[in-house]
Image (cartoon, rainbow, N blue to C red; front, side, top):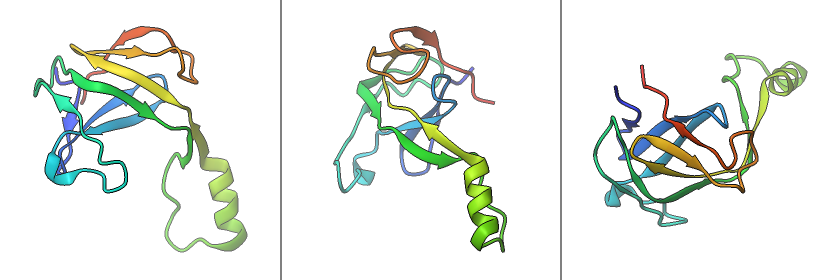
Length: 120
């Protein structure tokens, strides 16, 4: 079963069980990030993916879901506070369908290796 999916821009996406969110790595040289110019190699295997080099996701805030249309002001602020989530720093290697979490991760799987989650 596939462990990753490919975005239309060439990004390889996978579910991170440590962060409870998707992470991605750009593999298409025609869609490089204009700021970082980052590019990863991928073995083109969706069942046992390997990406190189390691992937580092910086700590950031996000929302569990998008706010409904039409809310604003105090209602929007309340929605954002109730749905705010912190995505921790995550540093990992993707090798042969497994995620090798580095010790500098800010989540409970730091230093562990786990099988990647199957894509639906």
